[in-house]
Image (cartoon, rainbow over all chains, first blue to last red; front, top):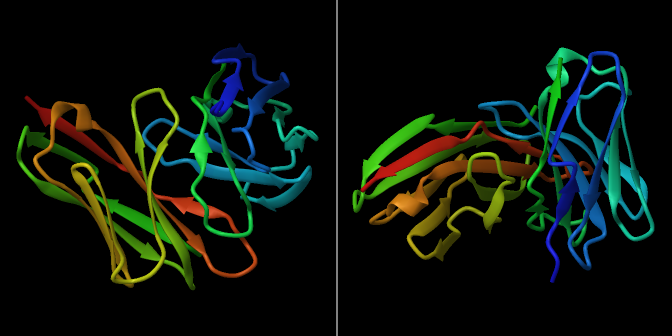
Length: 114
Length: 111
């Protein structure tokens, strides 16, 4: 069974640029959630995708957008990067969005905005 | 608004010294409460899900309990490899499945 993978591991971008982060969900999981985790904080929910549709969104501006593909892999896109976007971005997959199932997290992508 | 408060923020224990971590929550209706372990620079690792008051779950040296207002993660005779940040999250009942995480408790176990 393959776990959740994310790419790239680390990324350095300049303020104003755009970035795309990628996630492959665990085998058999149809739900993917994205989180932002600043240093010393808990993960903050960005949005969730269930069967290629956005299924919930946290308090993040529209410049944070995403996609889920038919194979349930997913992308997180962030436009017009700001310094405060520097964080660990986590992807988590689960069997279903319809019940409080446990989520399995990837190792994260560390984004630094300068 | 759902809220999760974890205490203490940091905890240092000697190997073998048992203790408990607290997760207090405010939610309009609890669908589930989750505990995760997070090692530095890595993604959280799922530990437990609790659904209703009175429920308990165990895994090795860890035991999670749930009341209507809080959850405890009891660590019995911890070892240095138990050192990590422990995160608590709640998921509210209703139409939204958005989980709310606490800031975590950083645990260091000294040999």
